[in-house]
Image (cartoon, rainbow, N blue to C red; front, side, top):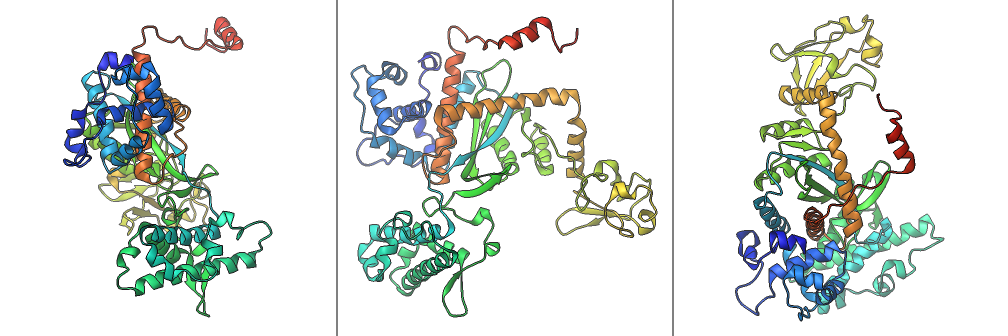
Length: 530
């Protein structure tokens, strides 16, 4: 209510006539409900973590919702299915980000967000809305999902494909059919996997042999079945189908974990694994303005944080909200990202790891201890020895190799490399520009000024915690990256509304009172300089 009083409606029907929402509504057919109204109801739904039915009931019952939505007191609402249809339209590529752009345009006009300030970014895991499946169970469900989809769109085609015994394996979900359960030995599981392999292969080969079934092979679940079979099975010498060894499977980034969410992946971080994706939240953190979410990125669980850094900054620049200082954790910076940020006029503040260099053991001299003369193409080691001319490598790096005559008798050898004599030290680093960008970042991150700025990064943890508590950010409501991204964007907008509500509150909330022990420390200046 306070946000509406201060800024007016966040969404208007005219906003959805913008080219960013092109094709969202047809020119012909039955008139649609107000998209501005549906967008605001959807945001309030995520603000209070409600289901579709609960959101429609709240719109009809709560006077605060009616005021925020600009509705008449007698308004009774609409059918809950309308929200699902509206989300399906918003889930199309680009529209979720356009919805966030619409909000940010109004906040920018009100002076609540601006370019050239400070921003911070962090990510967290998101669990997929699917059941965790074992490998054999995943194979059986892939066959069943393909059969179910064919039966839904063309039941006359699936009847000739059904073979005796398939009703036991695919008539119901694999976990409820008792094909897999306690006491199943390795041999039994391998036999069951062979049956699934033969059934799935028979289904695919039959469809490929039918010249009129090309469109069936393009169905999503059938295409996924073909992908899974190529990844997991190989022909045995007897002509049957056997599972590939685990070591022969593709990397996790290419391996679906469920037929019902082909975008979900398995990933591990700090010894904790999860199945799903990742969300990256970016917020402004200027001291004189409310801290508001300015970008939301969604990726597969296996995508490294560093792959999102430049994309996030380019989206902020496109919105006219490019930060002067961007604070991130150690997962985001790379040499290329540091250069790209500097090219955009952004100072990237993030810890850069200090290693011994490629090919060197931990604890030995790092590249920082070497003096590189890029003009002559040689390096000088801590022992004052000069390397041979640098050589380019196929992976784009450059190598400075030292002479055996210098490295073998060197008194600093044990501190430089752990390889036995007479093997010399070879310093492998990035080319000049990324190398110097990385070295500059390492030098500055130990200064008090850098640490003071970097301390602001901790605030993004509170934003993620707020998103988890308010909208259950770590659990996907939907399947597939497009819908998951829409959920994350709506959560970001909901956080902005809550923070703007606090910003416009007539009385500001007082800081939490310290504990008695903390109060004694503060009163008596214990542990603080006199």
